Image (cartoon, rainbow, N blue to C red; front, top):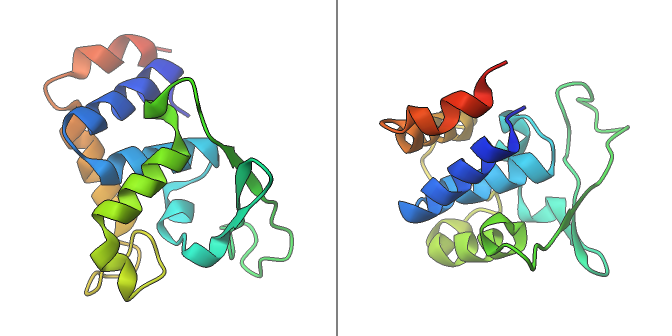
Length: 143
């Protein structure tokens, strides 16, 4: 897990650099308390609406390949800090990448992209966000 200051730094840097992919992925990974591989396979059928929340339920996880014991993840809007609002990020992401979503219900799988490439792309994006600003994260990351 990453400390809250590093999480906020990644969100802020994603927005500053117009990296909607990294902003949305970071929010979903944090709010779902998920591994990167679990975020990669999210599709529209994994989302539902509660009274005031998004409900995310994976098809499977590393520990439950059959998907028999999966729990729902409740994701709430953040009316106090828009940079930390998964609802807003998903809306912006769907607007910006609508062309990719027309032919595929998977959020992060672009046409012609190899299955499972999302975590690698996310890792590369995070490295780019941090490059040259290592001092911003080194203090919160010290154990």
